[in-house]
Length: 258
Image (cartoon, rainbow, N blue to C red; front, top):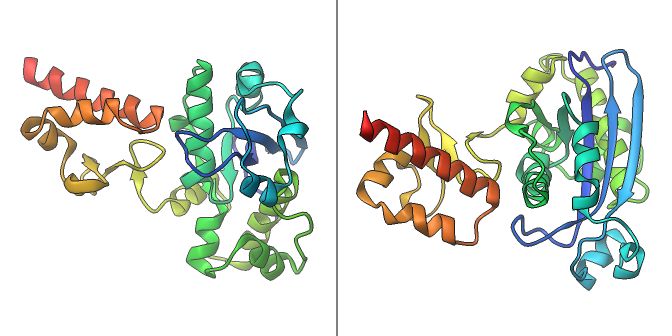
């Protein structure tokens, strides 16, 4: 099924040094940009993470320190990458929980201002799990009747994700061929920050989504425990989470001054 697009939709996948959004870095990014007219553009880039790649990560994606030693850093490609995805919606596999938060961190570290909160985000894994409950390779076999060759390479995973989404739209009549619908369907929560440490409740109010204050309103926590803000800002949290926390605190302080 041809995707029904209003904006270009960028399918992308990251290979990284690990799975810690705060500490780990990108070593490869591959994207497939699908335009509303059906035109497709793809690109894959290796990136020097400026840190050692752990052997256990190399064992998964096959990328070693030697492979990326002469590659550009993310900071060096950040502006051009931001330009390439400007005005695009984003799609991936487990992207809402990992790839989007990590990519946002890399842009923040590079000092490149890109607001991904305005993008529609389609997570093909979420659709798959809600429908069938399996892995990427199984999803590819199930929906496309193909074996996923070169799994855990960014390019192969990106292309497979694109094919799976089209096959999902063919298979499930209830799935609307609309990126806004797919973005909403891909989400388990309405996140305030990409890592989901704060979410919106049913009334659209910001709520803490972890730790001892899980389920409590952010404004309520700031009233009763003002030091909680400092704990987050000085703790081992993603920069995007800290920015969101700063925004919520500024809103609360503005209310107090009114």
